Image (cartoon, rainbow, N blue to C red; front, top):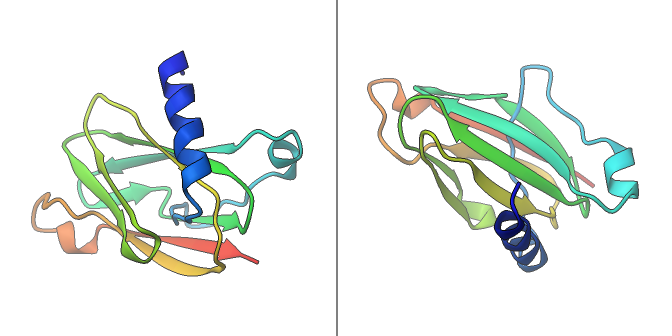
Length: 130
């Protein structure tokens, strides 16, 4: 990550109190070590036609994280309306979203850029624990 990215992530991090769900079938829980050190946990999420990988993640309320989004094939969207998250994931680029969940609950992330006949099923689950 270059200096510009670090500055952008820090600026976004202080402005957001949101949560995003992504994950694997088994889910992903954030490690305490990264939070205790004051560093956000980095979560890598890949988008490709009709799926996010992982397809489920779990975050903890109040613990900072950075979602690092990439696309393997085309532009996809990453939308969580209740949390005011709306990002584009462009192929060949990394999109980073700094989040500090402020509200526990379960949320659905959807792709809001049409990517073909399976587009309607391109979702992932984001759970924020209290």
